[in-house]
Length: 389
Image 1 (cartoon, rainbow, N blue to C red):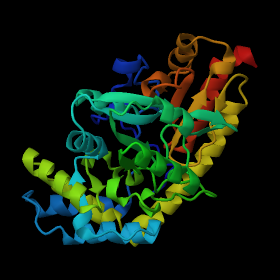
Image 2 (tube, helix red, strand yellow; image 1 turned 180 degrees about the vertical axis):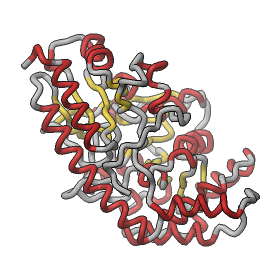
Image 3 (cartoon, rainbow, N blue to C red; image 1 turned 180 degrees about the horizontal axis):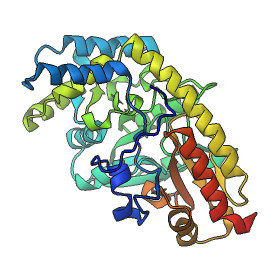
């Protein structure tokens, strides 16, 4: 199995490929799908074997005894992130959008403010609003071609009605791997304003060479207000399993979350548990190492091609497989550069404004696809903006 394998996902109920014409007007037969954050790669063989084992057994009953599943999570976090997790600190949700919504529901009340550092993953604002809470957008600043946080400005924004802050670490869509000093700044901000801190670390395994992810749990003095979120789904391309982990060390926060899970009758999908157990293994680790090397190659190719087009600038990607491209220097309106990408280049991408303040001149491109498609995307963009050459 190679990351270069071209797998046709059309007609498989794949939102990324089958829905791009309905949503973006990009023809399914000729378009390139570079929007939804899943990969066009098969997961590692142990994950496929775990699913096949259930099919071969033939009975899809209730899952019992999750000790191996919890042990696999513990092993992975210790081995890959230097993080010792207690088994009873782990909750399994239906993915991390559900995990985020559960945190908002459990730890805030209607009308409360929830802080986001924008631009940021659009589902955060969606679930905050759907829960009747208020989105507080703290816009990040660009410095030396990357996002940084201005806590003095954010302090001035707070009015005392805020109860939670959600951090995306590593950051989506900017691709930042936050430094220890930056994480300490977030922790201090949460403490100053008495905020629950939810750290979504779903991209923590997809870090480019030369960068090191630091789990927020490694920051001192924050455990009493910290909720950690991780998942196998982005790392191993099994988003359809809809499984994720909310990990809470503080006993009071943990009790509140457990009570809300029980009240809603939530329990995990057995397939997600089998897949995660298989993924969090030495074979899975070797596969991830190969994946990151491949994504790094895609990143280099895409950045070189995009940055060679006058007026286009991709933000340096430190983690994730989501390239954040700025079109401001084209001098075009958002409607015009988006039209060129979608209609002329026939590439479906995420629109910058959906990520909140600071996203107006940007588009997000998913480069987790065979390299031949990345090459084709670069060629199409160069042609679509050929008059700027």
